[in-house]
Length: 327
Ligand SMILES: [Zn+2]
Image 1 (tube, helix red, strand yellow):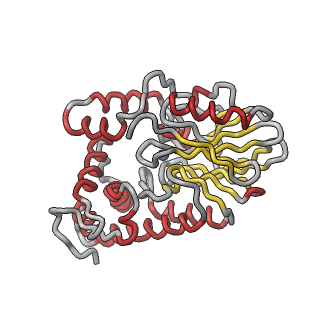
Image 2 (tube, protein in one colour):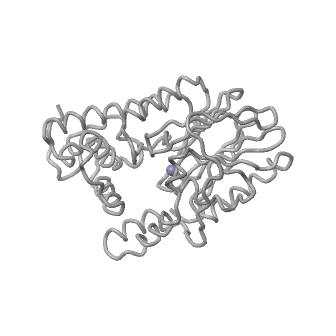
Image 3 (cartoon, rainbow, N blue to C red):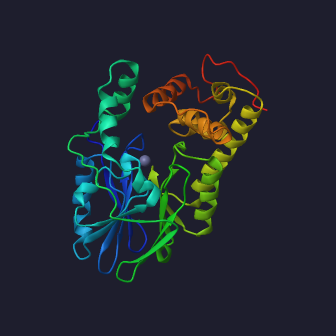
């Protein structure tokens, strides 16, 4: 993906807009803008300073009369908060568990991984080589909450709700009831495969139910195009499929690799990044046996890449991996 890929500001209903990245792959994240009567709120910054700066410049006309005074980070993955330093005057809000994971070491370990020799480094350079992580000083939240936090942007009510652990430990959604709009961060990859860094998948399924119960018509995902509640129902169906198959595999004594190889994705095989199945199965296994170790991030990314290199969407069977019945 060429670095020039950025995004565009889409006006939604009422005070709500969404910054939608031109590309939905790893690290190319969306953001949200809610313009109130007295001030505006930004949902998430982007993965590096150039992308975040370009987004803020595009938003400048919209916030001329209601300056950007609040940022809500939906979670602690760098593609949703590494740009925080470019909004230095804003109050930055996140869940307590997300804030605990926003550390400078996130940037430094990613930069070190990108310099690593060998296939792990090559794979990461292929995935993240289009971003520029120079100059990033992690700027953590100035206010944290757990549960619910209601804000008033000069007559526009904004509700922040914690919904994790699911995608990460501290997922937050931002709901604007009057506009029937909800910004859900990476609890939804529109057109892409979910990835459960934290899990359990049952927690994510419950989060989908909570979001659906809000009755919003417009759902802004962390990645991919703006969508509606049907996309959350599809994510819920994928997570249920994986949880049931991985739980059965675990109890049958199959290895994670065997369970991944046996799992038929059906219509979900058409989503981008199908290799995230590797992490999702691992999340189920670790929930069932918390003593199982975490794979190093670079190794995990490589295994996902290997799965995708062998993936045949027409059959959903990775090449060279023998078929096994998941039941
Ligand atoms: Zn993301």
